[in-house]
Image (cartoon, rainbow, N blue to C red):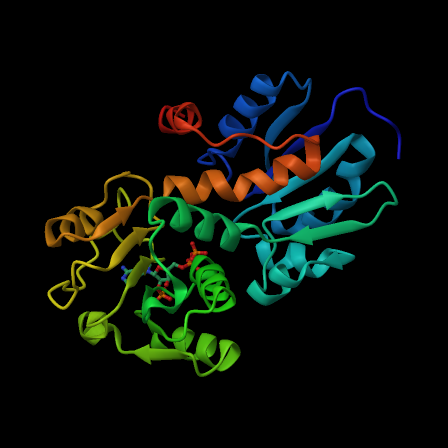
Amino acid sequence: MTEQPFPLAGVIGQPVAHSRSPALHGFWLKRAGIRGYYIPMEVSQADLEQAIRTLPKLGFVGVNVTIPHKERALALADVVTDRAALIGAANTLIFRRDGKIHADNTDGYGFMENLRLGAPSWRPEAGPAAVLGAGGAARAVLASLLDAGVGEIRLSNRTRARAEALRAEFGSRVRVFDWVQAGNMLEGVKLLANATSLGMTGKPELRVPLDALEQDAVVTDLVYTPLDTPLLQKARKIGCTTIDGLGMLIHQAVPAFERWFGARPEVDGETRKVLLNA
Ligand code: ATR
């Protein structure tokens, strides 16, 4: 590998134009005074493998991987962290000096950090958690909650078979509820996480009734456009602690930045502001 004067990183996906990661990493690079660059790269599925093999030769220290490449990137890597294997997808690749591609998934870490800071009194053993959705984001949430020691996760998804598949994989601490009855699973939960795309700008609203939700529950939404989703608004009216999804996006980027550029970025109000304006 040739030594490059400026460390390069980026995000590969298709589409990639919506990604806020370039603004985030670009801000941290500038603030740390590191002369590096973080570049969005539109890469098709057919070109993914070649791109991953070529980027290290061009001076890239690693990349983030987003839709639709997260599973394939994991399969292409030489070394895989336990948490990436558990989630079944990679969001971060590190190009090692020995030429090996190291795959990690920091989404679950980002989710837990956001939760820990947004609801410091929440405890995994406090009671059941409820998760809506069964896509890649839901996998990361399930893996991290189970790892943290949550005893029961109630899971509901429009396509029930996807939720059943997660139950089969993650085990009996996961209980599947029918999508039309998702409201019923909220009784007694201490945490509710929306990992569907419902409520996002341009998507239908999340219509799960919240009547059974008690005010001691923490409610978090992975959707961050808009920042204050209808779900969070309704939960606040009940009296629940609410946590928006922007923090997860920021925190998942911290370990990647540190590995690539050798400095741990600080997550603060200024960082949030940069992302909100991105
Ligand atoms: P991600 O990787 O971000 O999780 P995904 O794999 O496309 O993305 O998952 C999107 C999630 O939002 C899924 O749980 C999806 O439900 P299905 O598995 O039934 O597709 C959910 N979702 C998207 N649109 C929805 C809608 N209109 N009603 C209910 N759920 C929806």
